[in-house]
Image (cartoon, rainbow, N blue to C red; front, side, top):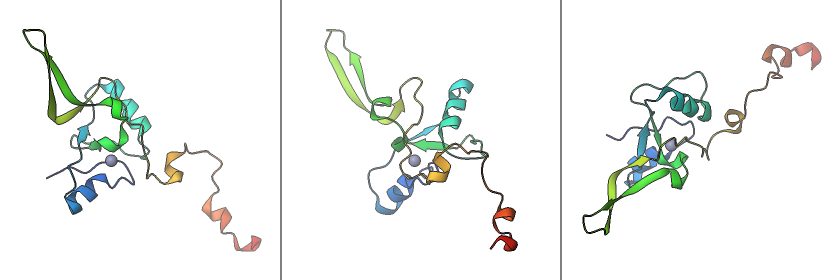
Length: 125
Ligand SMILES: [Zn+2]
C-alpha cells in the first residue's frame, strides 16, 4: 500500500490511489540528522516530527534532485543507462516545492498575531 505524503495540502498520493495514475515516488526522511532537520525546517508543518514511516513525495523536489536513471560504464567503456524502478534523491536534496500549502502555513509565523479573545471583544464592536 502506498504511503501518503506528509506535506500538508499535498494530494499527490491520494490522487494516485483514486485514479491509478502513475505511481508517485515517495522518499523517506534521511537518516542523517543534519539533513533531516533541513527537511523539517523546509516542510511547512507545525508541531510535528516524522515517524519512521513518514514520507515526502516527489512533487516537493526539484526535478534535478530526483535520480531516475543510473548509468553504468561497461568494460568496453560504453555507458549503459538504466531506469531505476525506485527513484532516489541526489545527495543533500531537500524538499523545496510546496504548491498546495495554505498561505498561512507557508509563511513564517510572526508574533504580531492577534489574540482571538481580544479580536472578539464585544465592547469594541
Ligand atoms: Zn507530496
